[in-house]
Image (tube, rainbow, N blue to C red; front, side):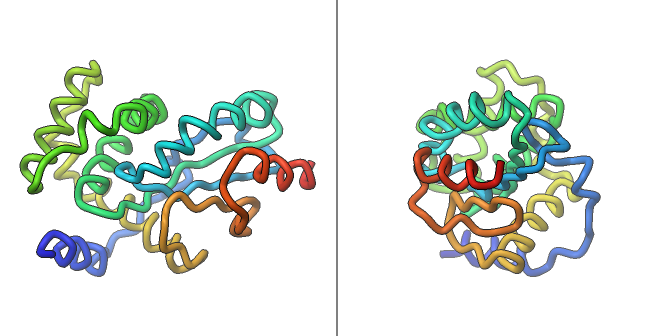
Length: 191
């Protein structure tokens, strides 16, 4: 309960605004007609499922062909996800690779009963995966922290997001059951 209260206090005290356009983790054609935004939490099993079962097909048919762009936005649901989001955002040139690795190996790093244990598990995983990141510097970086929290604030404010993953297609919330078949039907109408 204390962790949730601390997270809410951090969430409400956000003050700085960061230039989001240059700091987005994305895949696909930057100038695509179809823009898909995914609000997600790195500790969310449904988000990991999206990356395993939906994203590869989406990438193959829409992103790699230049028809669409996907942006991954942060919507951390707990402190572990918040810190993992900061790590992903800290190393933008490897952001997509780190994001995919964290989702593929969620059981390896989402371990611990307190913030210190969770951070140690995350740090150990990042080191073992070979990502060259100054963990402490990333976790304590106020600009990155503000960026992650701004994603969450904007998602809640602009799209009434309250769960993850939530998909936004061309600024409209995707309301159907999240599977590739439903997503494809919606995307095909926009081509």
